[in-house]
Length: 281
Image 1 (spheres, one colour):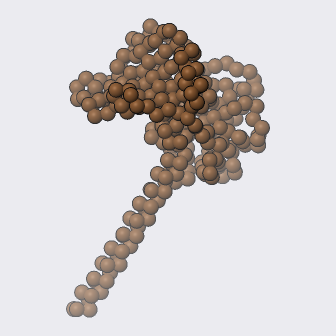
Image 2 (spheres, one colour; image 1 turned 30 degrees about the vertical axis):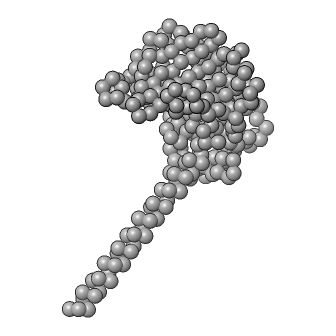
Image 3 (tube, helix red, strand yellow; image 1 turned 180 degrees about the vertical axis):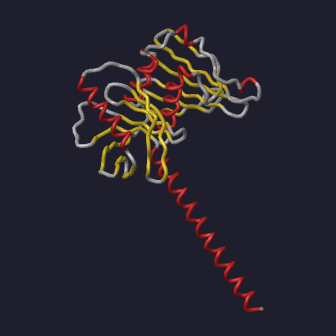
């Protein structure tokens, strides 16, 4: 009888040990996946796509790990959508693009770029470069854009060429301010706006933002309707988006932070994506 009890105890201890090892393995795998996801986040410029290593134009891809959103410039249009990762596997879609008409050469490289994203199955990060691949081999290489802080002359430039986009969100317990111009990104969590952190705005990010808001109708912008109204009832954070062009400023009606009107969702996501990207530099 004592032998059976001892044998049972040994079996239980072995099972417990195996279970602990399995749990640890899962935790370590998840931690590694999260680390890779964080490293992936940021803005990249393409250097190779399939068999082309001298691209006819600057192409970009931006990953936002906080929202699993991807965006960029594909040759003719800006694109945006979702991506998912699991370990070193990655998939894109659905992706949407703006609707510009371009020359055949631009359309050709754009189709190839978007086709590559649809075929991608895995990714690898080495230094500041990312490699997208599938079973047939490497499809794309891109290099991370490293932001730096703006010079004083860049900051002065904004006083004469005032084109600014500002996102502001606040509640009882939080405050977020993001202002982007051609030369700089300013962020603050100070409600009095006395303390800022300044970064340089990447030209490609500014071009993408400009393309998004250049056709905005001023009157319609100020009549946008918020899709949800949590901020009105439970003290949830509310936000606004404003655009200054020259001596004209337009501001959206208030909306729930994180749930902008559909008409400006892409623009808001891009602003927040830029903020997250530069703050990690």
